[in-house]
Image (cartoon, rainbow, N blue to C red; front, side):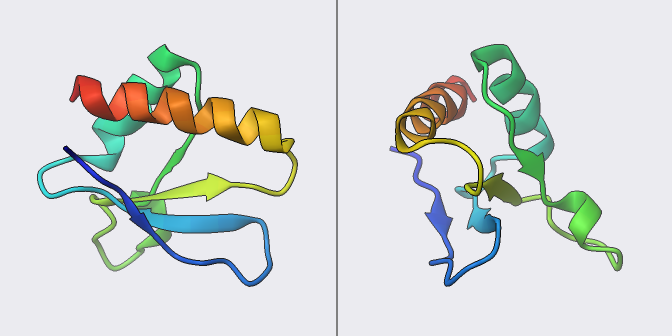
Length: 81
């Protein structure tokens, strides 16, 4: 099973997550849109290059129920890759 690892936020608005080997953040972004969840590919946050295997997830404004639904949708998108 493909698994995502992530930071443990101590504040702020986002957490960074690392995707399983071979999963592209850009491809997961596209699949996420199809599944109804928005994530940010990590690529724009690495001006020197990199980030192909990372994503940023906002947790500051959605409710706990919306976060649960978003994680379900993210899982659907990940499994489709």
